[in-house]
Length: 260
Ligand SMILES: NC(=O)c1ccc[n+]([C@@H]2O[C@H](COP(=O)([O-])OP(=O)(O)OC[C@H]3O[C@@H](n4cnc5c(N)ncnc54)[C@H](OP(=O)(O)O)[C@@H]3O)[C@@H](O)[C@H]2O)c1
Image (cartoon, rainbow, N blue to C red; front, side, top):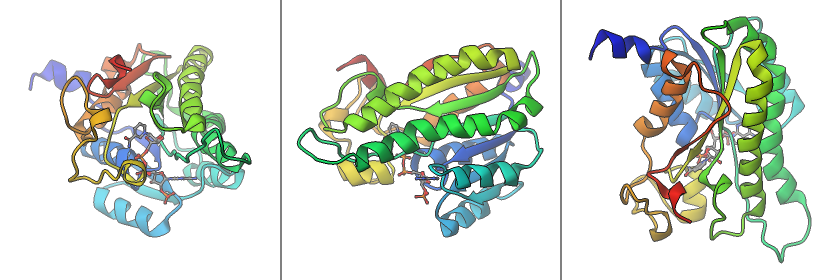
């Protein structure tokens, strides 16, 4: 690799916090960042899973057991970080529950919006001191929100809360991108296509070895997303290469976001 390219994408020595890093996309991001020399802080509710991924990442990885959908959980994360500068915040934890038109009640709708949309906003707001501690004019602190291709096209599932929350994440990222710029913090969103995870297993029966369902076959081929696809996007946005990018929604979907 050329010295130029190595420097352009270098993120070694930064500190990142990844919510929902014990499974699926968050785990891929945490593993990719750790392999790139980043000190990764892993957040999830399951204590055993947090211990396991911290052990797997090794090095300087740290774990925080917290529910980001609660104010207590968000306070615990801020307290654990203390006054350490935070270069990269990846708001990844998310969920989906069916919210069909013929269902009653609002519990599921509220829970999806609470975790997918409200929590990234509240956590970002809470961690502004740590982000500002890592921010400088040429090298902003990065907030990276994991949205979804569901933000772009209505899907075939009746998951109205999920699509609305992810569309909200996309707009919130643009809005935050504009307002955080004066504090030398960028904010972008990534819209993943299909990746193997607990979430997709629950809805699509798609474990790591399974075939990609027809509705999710992308123009770039019948495969699911892999660690390098999502970690590569996060590393790009977190490195010198992505330092002048804010407020964008970056689909990482094999092009499925180009077809409805
Ligand atoms: N997989 C896909 O194809 C896909 C596509 C587009 C977008 N996405 C988005 O990518 C993100 C990750 O999804 P995934 O599919 O990788 O999900 P996943 O496999 O279900 O993993 C979810 C992660 O979030 C954690 N989590 C869940 N609720 C939490 C809470 N209240 N507080 C803290 N951590 C919590 C889980 O651990 P605990 O349960 O132990 O807390 C786990 O680590 C989500 O925002 C999702 O919407 C996924």
